[in-house]
Length: 490
Image 1 (cartoon, rainbow, N blue to C red):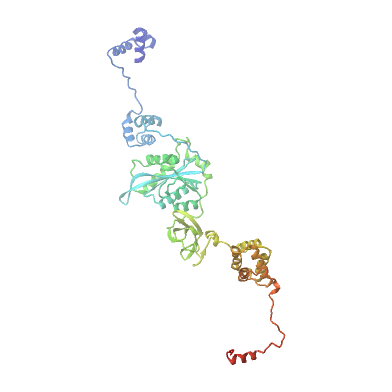
Image 2 (image 1 turned 90 degrees about the horizontal axis):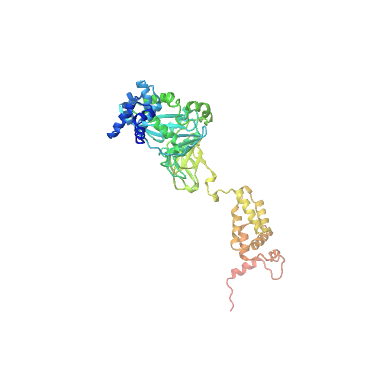
């Protein structure tokens, strides 16, 4: 109104004309023009607001970094506030003005994903002493149905127990669990291949879900649980005093069932409990019939026979880890063997007796993992390559011996002769050996060394004459000569 009157007056309209145009009293026009001449401004008359009685309270609570929803709920409960949440929210946005960071929306299918994280909530009295406490939060990404737990540490066992409690609360297991890069789950936050803590990996395998680490310093990868952690800290725990852990846990359970999971979610505009029961619950994986039992790991050394010793029995490990120190953990009847947090072997635990070898043949090198049948087949093909006589020698060699106790070393020796002799020489040597029914590596070797492969087969006959002649003598006559001593020519 101030600006309009000033503009019309500069254009030449008098006070009466301006009053008629704006349908206001002429005195009002005169007073405003007088203020303008004096260089002053016209102040707007203050209007009453439903928040006026609560502004001081709102300012104090906002300074504690409480959310608008938390302040709104407390005003309803403590002061009987009847105004809308939007009125409180708009007022707080004027006095706080938070900065906003853009992020990409990640959609998931029912039962596909859950996100987990911890949030510090201050101290809680235990046995008369205050201890630091954290809240564990797991949120199902599709329905936004969530579970929270109060803990005093972020150890592996605590982390796994919280998962168990959450899965029981949901009545099932999601396909994927997105986790932060905390040491309870991730030992090395590598972008391409993060190293999952071995006990947590074993737990995930037992329950059938895939642990998916988030990228470092990228909170939007698990934005749903990030916002829920803030919501739980703000709405459930901030500025509340609990006498002990039981009181805090009981309050959080009541808060989950009466506020968190039955509210209209700010993003989905739906009630998480209703979406969970109607759509997502049936898509979850079933809980395992046997509970996961966490076991302490045992350090073992891989022996040269590719086995480790555990509780009186021996379990195989890939030969590449010979001499290395590995970790063995027992969980649900299985022994899992890890090297630097990487699972390298898995066996059922042997509980029947002691001194048994539980072996996976694939853990041996290829040269040690060939059966006699494989050797027999390979040697047969190589003897065929040498020639037809070598093949016949091989077949006869097998028939003469015991196939179950097949001596592959003799044939290996013959095949090794190919380094020094041609296949033709070895093949003819085999023919000569067959003729004399001599099935031996040494015979084949000597024939090749002496170079007698071209001699006629029938030349090897006796030259002893069995008929007596005038030059023949009885043996006793030669004995007489021996007794005479040495003969000398004089």
